[in-house]
Image 1: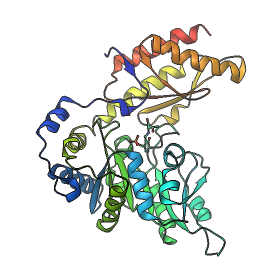
Image 2 (image 1 turned 180 degrees about the vertical axis):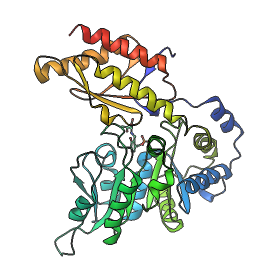
Image 3 (image 1 turned 90 degrees about the vertical axis):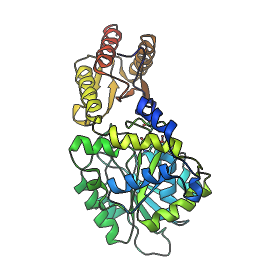
Image 4 (image 1 turned 90 degrees about the horizontal axis):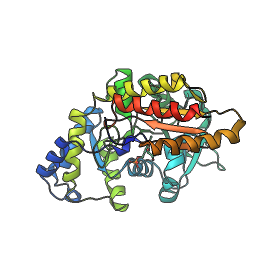
Length: 352
Ligand code: TLP
């Protein structure tokens, strides 16, 4: 039970005492000189877990994605990705600005491109057309509510892209949530992609950081791009040390977050005025709609009412649209907190 229940994101997790201890004791060096032993250990550990030759520690998931896109492409190429993807929606058009690439967003049913959609989106050779430089996939899918695609679905997309000599990048910010939920090894999801970014700063609870993994040649290129962006971090072992604890200790416990999300979603489904698609709740994200009698405008008012009413009860939730709310479970939210959240929802919606 916590004083404040913060469901706005799993990025709000606080480092564990073990992480703080590891950070204090971390052996460090200058990472730009590739002399920080703790950063190197995290990178090697991540690469090994994901079945890749090398890893690169970066400041954030956003940096991991932009470094990857820029490292795979050249100016004027096109990047095929899902319309609801994080890269397209929430990364400040970084790839367009820094990499001078054009985004080709494709509307998908569940956030995952099908092999047919990739085949259709890849440009044929023609003087008028931007050449396709990259295909991006996201797992778990943030805007679709933490939904997972299988390793086989990723491999099928990669087969089509590779057939056209186009590389594939996986935004696996919450890849370990997918691995735990589907009871598959993380490396199965990454087997056929050319690069992957995952975050240690979300459900894995480290304070800072993400790791890009790929071939040694790709990571060497990415290291230059990271430097160009000002991401060469010197004695970064101090923060990488927490990321090592994330990989060693925080992965299996994600199942608790998934169980809490399920309890929350099932509780929401029982409340009049709120609507949730239980099938979409596969990991630690619950996206639900506020549906108050009185139509869309009434619902918009109700959304604000719910967010404010929860805040007054020390429960923080986040509206991601006029009638849409996202709750994310994580290690700093326990089963009692979920009960308190559902009580708050029930009290507030009862008055509608
Ligand atoms: N997502 C954050 C916000 O930016 C929305 C969140 O609270 O969920 N890929 C995916 C799929 C993500 O969900 C995020 C972060 C990122 C990349 C970017 O990671 P950071 O925040 O470390 O730059």
